[in-house]
Image 1: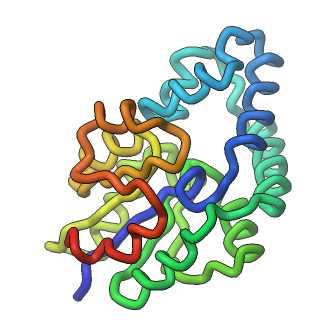
Image 2 (image 1 turned 180 degrees about the horizontal axis):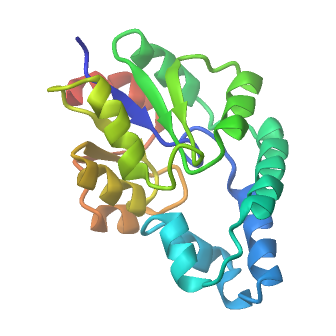
Length: 207
């Protein structure tokens, strides 16, 4: 049985930073947290678990069903229009012929499905979105239980995800074409770093 390879979506597969930033910066402004609404500050939230960091920095009971419903609709809308990162799909298709692939995202699963359908990416066995858990660690462990006694790789572009992968017992792999720069990723001590989507075609050499 082949080991599972898990992928983050935003920044790794989906070129979604601009609409994501437009939505969440406005949310923060509306909540009176203008100091957190810059690109730099929002990216810093991803140096840990995004939702945990957000709750710490913007306390209150605002993340209720009404807000989540509004956020889900907004994310579904912009993910329908979101392009994929060039050449990533080729690597995904190549890997899916040899390994079970999973998508583990802080985005909504429905929004992720819209993106995958529009981009004709059909190589994932399961999509685990924020509805499953706010914690990437929990989602990674859910997949790992389906593949006991096998190494599990998690590929992401943010240092917070790499920390959560390690906490789950998975092997963290960084990519530098996404949201966090190489220096930030290196500080999270990934097992290794991929610099271009083309390197996914050679990923088997790391396993």
